[in-house]
Amino acid sequence: MESQLPLFLLCLLLKGHSGFGRSNPAGRFDLFSAMMNPPEDRLERVALVLDRAMSSPNTLRYLGFYQQMRSSEG
Image (tube, rainbow, N blue to C red; front, top):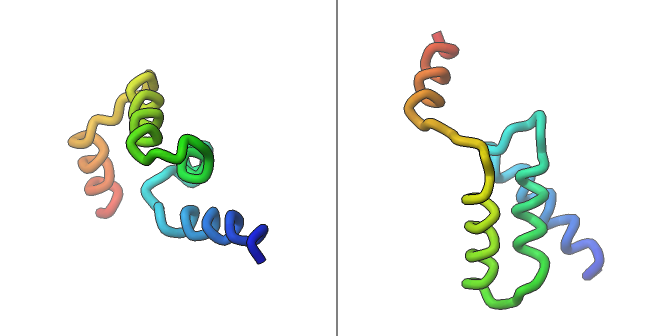
């Protein structure tokens, strides 16, 4: 039963975080990996995730993102 727990948690993550793009699931798998793997200290995990996020060259401009959503709705 215990070997099925990571799969169950991965399914919950994939269903529960719809904000990640469906075409490229790598972000969800990175988040799952950060949740399931060492270090055990939560603050160290947060630091690793933030370091990775801050080193990403991608920029999301929230205003532009939400304007695109409104224009596609009608």
